[in-house]
Image 1 (cartoon, rainbow, N blue to C red):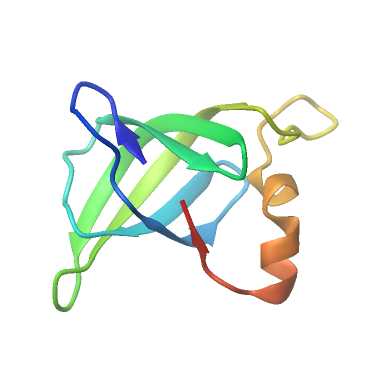
Image 2: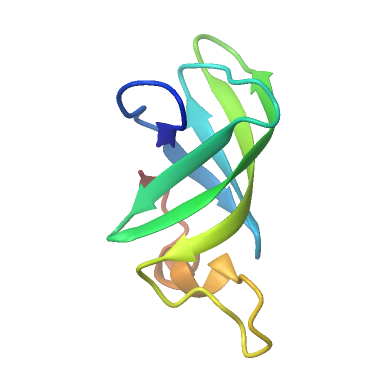
Length: 99
């Protein structure tokens, strides 16, 4: 994950996917409203952080509202973002994905 305005990427694990959002596990907390880009299998999802919640240990769960997707088919028939299309294989297998 790249945080706009800061150097270097952050390694995150994608925990949950909805049609227009992600929940990732991070070792760093970020303020709501921060713009980020998550790279996944050649596609890029850009959006804003909605929340960062500290969990047990060093874990932080970060919710991201995705606004644009490039490099992959992730739009529904109506033209709206549908991340379920991008993650359909992992959803079937229910295995976490690293981004």
